[in-house]
Image 1 (tube, one colour):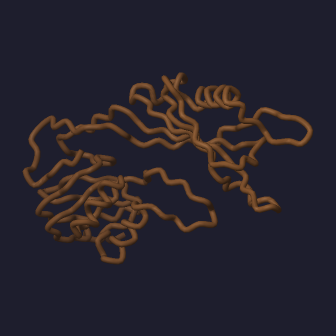
Image 2: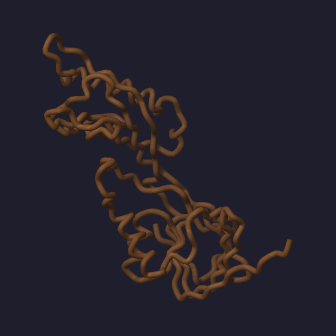
Image 3: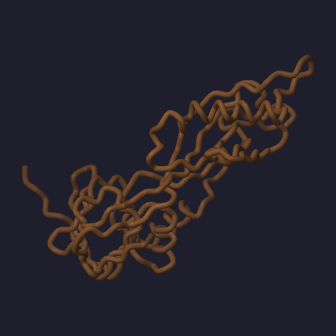
Length: 246
């Protein structure tokens, strides 16, 4: 089977990263963006609504301006003979000659003398409200002296409105977890569920019922976390064309 030569481009400025900061920077300056991870910033939206966020809007605008030279699904990124080398999940090799490389995220970067030191993460836990989901307000609950910071009632994507037009609700919690604790049981979704259940009881938030008042019944659905506080640590020689953005 004949091996195809790599695709090769030349750009004055290239932005490498997947977070909203990278997308906004590329869009503001009109630079080409390489999205080097399948991670995405957190954004909750109802299923019947259009996705409205700065990240998605920025990606769309960069796309129609032909500033996304490599489609998503990037496998590895590295440096090769002073060029940026990208290998996609389909094993397509892309070489980019660049004047400046603006790095926001090091995900999947194979050979650079820089370490990404993550201090903590923002963690979102999604809970299905199995009993008591007809809550009239989009209540936001604050936690004190806890790694869990807030719990928000949001319109459910599991069920439609009832006959009176009222929305069923689910709950999203937001926590800050140190990097060393992200896999610890003490900061797991199980512990978040226990803390949330206790808080709902303390505040007297119940399942509405004509006959009797019952506690809410919740079930953890899934967890989404992204790095929050982090820094770059240069551990060797670094190409002077590379600019690190923290």
